[in-house]
Length: 349
Image (cartoon, rainbow, N blue to C red; front, side, top):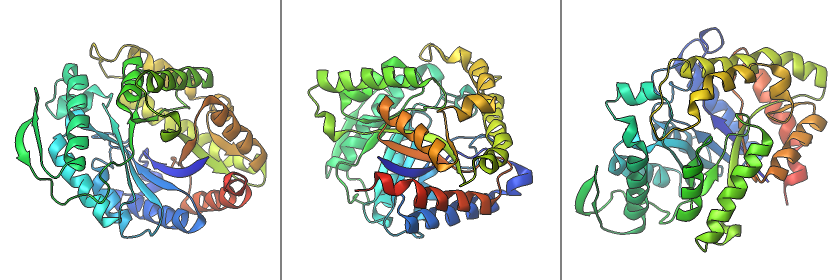
């Protein structure tokens, strides 16, 4: 089992004051994670909303993190390919791969907020086709010295990507909440998978990962070459009552920002099942629901039980959401230290 940090922060003015303060908190946490032995840091892309909108460009933030860390892997969790120009995305990520010395993992997503598509003048009904083209372009430009592509949305001839990435075949993770088509596509194409274990039941996560593993087998891929990563909220303390008192309100408020981001959204034909996201988010605005194997919170014993539940479902990398409205920076750093000293050594070989 590997452990990382996952940054899709719900910006809260009372907690973070401004974006600069939020970035400084991320830098300090990432530097500590690098020193403590965490495996990775991931940054997710969102736009125009307190729910993640302060990281509209993950490669830019990862470039800054590359200069502040030494060994920890850096990842996009993920880049929203349909609302970006894939060739530009490929070259931006190649820059990051060079700046961090080949430590980059690439997470890619379709994006699910219609408000983002609308503001960026992209038709959400084209999301799946645009996403598939983006994956092809990213892989092709990184693997080949020169690459040509003739698609519906992108077309170019004999392009030499500059700078050349250090990794020719980086780990690429496809992120999906609940779309069976995306899960099967990840397995067929030989991509790693990112699931969102707090958004659905662990039984649903287990079924999703089983579907993905079946698709890997059907396509002739080696199961051992691929990982499943899942973000989870983290807050641990030696005293369970103290941990619960500290995280109860912040974790509920975090989910509230997700609810607010989706409550006025619309969904295209390619997002079957997403119509219920408002009710899903509202159901998660219950601390007891989030505490029961949908997060890694509490004392080390309870947190360890949650990790084992995730592992039993098929997740082998957990990336922690640490920034939640109302949690002070020192509380987060103490929680990270507690996890690194009391829980992480049990999973390190």
